[in-house]
Amino acid sequence: MTRAFADLHLQVSPKSQQATQRLINRATKFGYSVISIPLVSGKLRDELVKLRITCSEAGLDLVSRADFHPRTQNELTHFLRKFRRQFEVICVNCDSKEVARQAAKDRRVDLLSFSSLDYRKRFFDRSEAELASCSLAALEVDVKPLLVLAGPPRVRLLASLRREVAIASEYGVPLVVSSGVAEEHLMRTPRDMASLAFLFGLDQASALDATSTNPLAIVKRNREKLRGHFVAPGISIIKEGETL
Amino acid sequence: MKRIKRRYIALQLECEALPTGHEVTDAIWSAVTKLYGEVGASLSGLTLINFDMEHKEVVIRVSLASLGTVRASLATITNIGSRTSAVHVLAVSGTLKALHATVS
Image 1 (tube, rainbow over the protein chains, first blue to last red):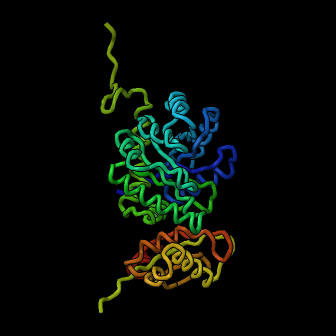
Image 2 (image 1 turned 180 degrees about the vertical axis):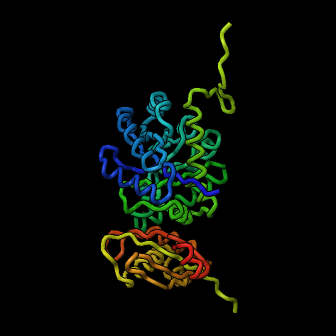
Image 3 (image 1 turned 135 degrees about the vertical axis):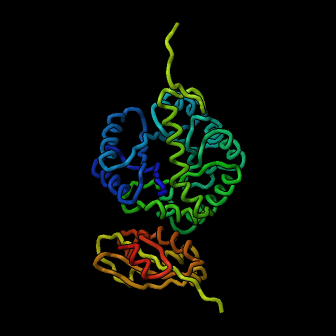
């Protein structure tokens, strides 16, 4: 059976239609079946509808995604309460340890993302991994910094990623490899993305899972929950009886 | 002496202007050297086999042991001859015959 591939982080502004169209066409050509473009707030719902139509014309499945940059724990919980049921994937960019810990604990968070440029702001350590393994959060790694950085910053990033990937696999935290690109020429085929994961210590099977099985599992789980028939994991409403 | 196992990789270049074969080889060597150093690059056994200018397709040969390192290095190429470019792997095979069959 052939794998279905997903890129959950195409960083394009939905307002620039031409660029978006080009990236969507490129994603189809490269063999992706699911893509996601982060939307900042609920104001862009019209844009989301337009994007869905464009993607379905190109034979792609668009996943709605929101990225948050909360400064405090309260801000994070506020965001989650407000937006969790509006988006299929929620990613939290952790700029402080406090936020990182809360995001790892919260079952409403799907993806944990850390700064690629400042290695001191990468808070994915053993405690973080233990919390994430008890909830449903996965660690997201963007490949864009590996393509645009050079020299010492890339060396530091690779060292951090290698350590984090080892910790994640030790604690069973799923890994999602996304592109994080806005430019066409930086887009890579799913297998090339998986081969980039080789640089931070993932074997071939795990790297392919990080671009296909793991992101698709998140999307499937959340779509199930958002359908309205969901009660708890493993329990859903099949049919409603008549009231007596 | 143990026989060295090799793999052939077919690549698709993506660039506006057409680079020369020399520029392509330089870009690949440079990417491998940047990531794995001169010792790592020397172990890769990298050789340019064919460059189809019309279709912008390149065939290179590497040692099987360094296939992963070369594939990762190829994905990091963003410039060929100071022009914005990308390199995508089309197929990997143990023989040129099978490689051409897969690509076509």
